[in-house]
Image (tube, rainbow, N blue to C red; front, side, top):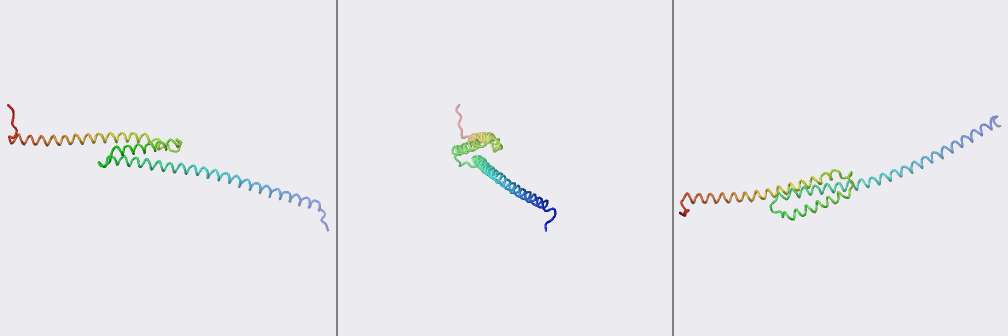
Amino acid sequence: MKAQNYVDIRKAIIKFTWYLVASVVMTTCFFFFFMKTSSVEVSKILNKTKDYDKIQSIQLDLKEKADSLYFYATWISSDSRINYRLMQSMLSEKKMQFSNQLSELSKEDCLLYRKLAPQMNTFFNTKDSLLAVTLDLDAVRADLIRCTGENRKVTRNLAIGGLTSAK
C-alpha cells in the first residue's frame, strides 16, 4: 500500500538528503579551512614570539652590560689600589661592546638604552673630571700639610732661637 502522495514524499526525502549532504560538506569545508587558518595564525604567532624572545634576551643583556658599566665606573673611585688605566681600558671596551650591540637592534627595540648611551658618556666624563680634581686636591692637601709642618718647625726654631740671621 502506497501513500497517495508517494512522489511528493520521495522528492522531499531526496531534497532533504541533498540538503543534509550539502550541509555536511559545507561544515567539513568550513572546519578544514578554519583549522588551516588557525595553524597559519599559530605559526605566525610562534615566529613573532621567537622574535620577541630574542629581542627580550638582547634587552636583558643590554641591561646587564649597562649595570656592569655603572658598577665598574663607581668602583674606580672607591678603591685606591685599582689600576686606573687598566680599569679605563676595560670600561672603554665594555662601552664599545654596549654600543655595538645597540647598533644591531632597531631603534624601537632599544629606545631606552639609546637614550642612556650618551648619558653614560657624560657620566664617565664627569667621573673622570671628579677623579682628576680629587687627585689634584689630594696633592694640594699633602703640600699644604707639608708646608704647615715646615712652618711649625721654623716657628719653633725661631722661638727657641735656633735660626741664625745673616746681617
